[in-house]
Length: 405
Image (cartoon, rainbow, N blue to C red; front, side, top):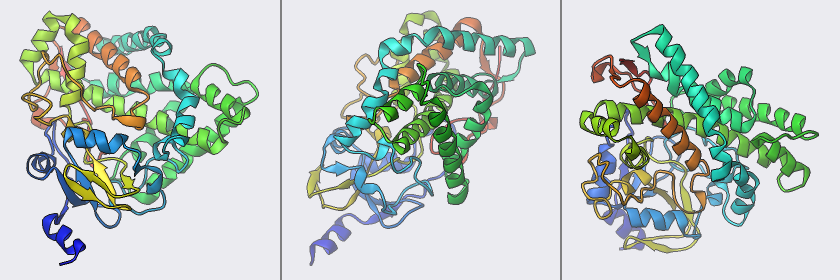
């Protein structure tokens, strides 16, 4: 028996038919693999071939931080994946490995320091207050996706980037297409091209007088020769799209989780000082994406979880399953606001740890604290089975979130 035949028998390739899930249901395929086959081989709906799928907490941390697993090597390979297209441009930081990744990340890091982001809190709070003033004036019932979760994250990241208000609807449309598996490759590529063209023009306009926003920082970096124009465009596109869309959906998921867990909601209303700890648990508990994101390629033979992964093989890892690993989290399927030790991986791990994690936390705090304070009787206006959930989404979330108060 050859080595290939042995691997095929021991690790059959399982087709992962990623289905749309309702609410905060955890993907049963992911749960089964974590429990029964923590390192397995899978084939996803798009791309070619198969990949290793790594699910346990320690193994996920290992794969996402060990330099022998490369993001750069993914470029040009039609690997098996959920989306029909790759989200980032080829020059994006998401496809880079250190030291190139370090150079690209450094160009935007100062816009995401704790001090820089805390300066955004007053404007984010004013925006939330204004949006909720308008919602309250219209009266219940109201759709929180329309009145809060959609416009607030878009406004916040657009302010960080320097995207003017009149361009934000176009940004939202491009982002919705890009971060879905449902529009098809051609439509997704057109959206990516349109967004890249916009940021190319904006960066070129800003080079003579950059200003003090992220586009200005990127424009300065191109003038100094620290970034090419293509690299700056790729960074701008990735941050604008992912920040607005991810916070929109996950903040809505958080509110839905609270409104469907009355005991935890009552606890938070009675103990508002618990909010930061509750947000960390919500981040861990909520399955915020479908399937898996960008893969990595093994650059040499590496053992993971007792399994030998050969050089050139594709590896997908799941932060969602890592967050449900019972070896790390006691009662992992429960939403527990008393979980003080919570080393979740919701913002990733290793060199590609999410640069916007502090911004996402800040926005979540503003959204949840404001809703809890202003609407002490906030509740769902429709039964949970009538709430619509986004279809073919890469980042999961409700289409509508009807509430009353």
